[in-house]
Length: 330
Ligand code: NAI
Image (cartoon, rainbow, N blue to C red):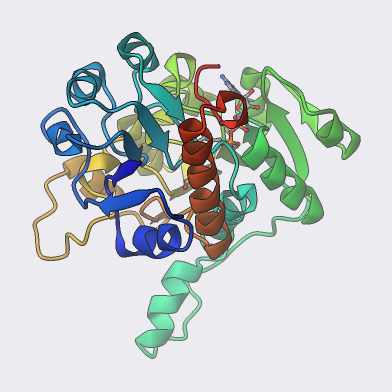
């Protein structure tokens, strides 16, 4: 079975290289999959895709024409996929629903701990032989009220970590986790959460009802000085509204691993080009904003699990064992 891996990097090759058994051949393309590049999949039964590959109806139409039978997502989120179009085209879609929730939850914590103690600024100062502390005043996380939106695999892991730090954790999710409740986490309405939280971390999927969940109205209800962390998906946040919140000082700290227009930026070395995205450029000017380029998943443990689950999905598909697959939409 021939597998075309799109948006691939050297590390994908390294981790999948360990897992691709005989009977399967993997061809690695650096190209992002979209309606224009989908023709590259001619002759491949499987396309293996990542978060910023464009799996819209137009792309799926081409994939069907060139004979693709399986879209194997090597990620958890599938907001970049038109599932209905895939189902109509008769293309099976699988994903990696859980690889290492700790990788993303710990990254959210890393963003928060860097911001609240100004580690990103201190790092630069010390390298400049500047050991002054002005402007680096932090705050204790202990006893702060931390809000987790979405207590699935990643959000519940983050919630546990924060209870371990002595924080009071409140959460919002249509599905409540009884284990978290036993740990003292209380589920509240979104409105209550906006009003009460000192720190808000987003861990829900991007879907119609969560698009721009953090908008002007939500921000106006938040505590002044709130810390906002987003390792979910960029479009959970209305970036322009957040910039207004930062300018007024209402948002005290912003940690992002995702950005709504990240597809044209992240995962590439753009250091020799001019930044064209003015909204992103504005974000970079704030000392209390810390951005990483979608690296929450990027740990050895997570990459190993991603490669193993993706290959297990593809093997099960080849064997016609759909029950053993992590299917999207079933
Ligand atoms: P999950 O499916 O285990 O949990 C998502 C939770 O969100 C569920 O409990 C669900 O009930 C809840 N939810 C759904 N709609 C909601 C709403 N309107 N309000 C509040 N909660 C809602 O997913 P998992 O594995 O925890 O991943 C969460 C998200 O993290 C993914 O959808 C993905 O977008 C993002 N992610 C980011 C990564 C990164 O590298 N930065 C890597 C992996 C995932």
